[in-house]
Image 1 (tube, rainbow, N blue to C red):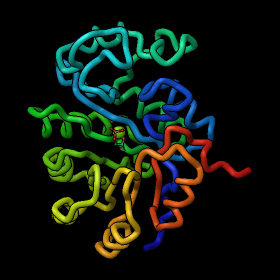
Image 2: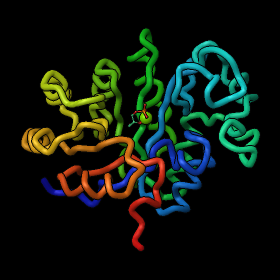
Image 3: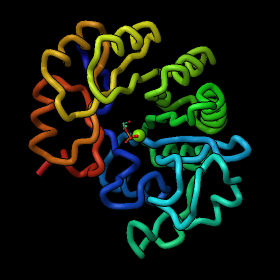
Length: 245
Ligand code: G3P
Ligand code: MG
């Protein structure tokens, strides 16, 4: 399978999550500084349906807030500190909206993988609102965002919106039912956890016409091994990992 120049071999995971608080603008700036050509981010809906860039369903791990993201309005989320948990240097770093993040990422000249993180009850709404927001700010001249999710319903909705943006099927590990679903959804890539990933699985995905992306790889020798096995791209918290020298 050819590696299109549009597709990177390295994608900064949640920006540059090793060096800055994940999924913040600081993390995207940091990834760009480290030479990342693409970044991945996670998106979910807050109360009121605005897409925000945030990994967990709840606030506790990465902010000074409490409870579910889905139960907080944007103004409440904006008052939170999403940086201090990582380092005092990032005190008061805010949670970005998807629009804010994409605007910055596009201006930094990077590509983006938008991972849809729906709550169980709002898969379609998450896809719809995230893609509507993305369509508003993402430049037509830039490579289209890659839309991925563990949630097949969210991917179905993304596909039905007819934007023609590439889809990525996310799974913890390779299973033939996932491959069937990815083929039915016509995704261009299949994103798998690196742990336990085997060459025969990579070959099977390539034979099915899918690119293979794998997460989360923070160790250089593991990255080299996976790329040598035929993986098309790795997600890493450390975008410097494959830097020359
Ligand atoms: O998109 C790759 C990876 O981010 C999937 O897992 O939990 O880090 O969002 P997670
Ligand atoms: Mg993710």
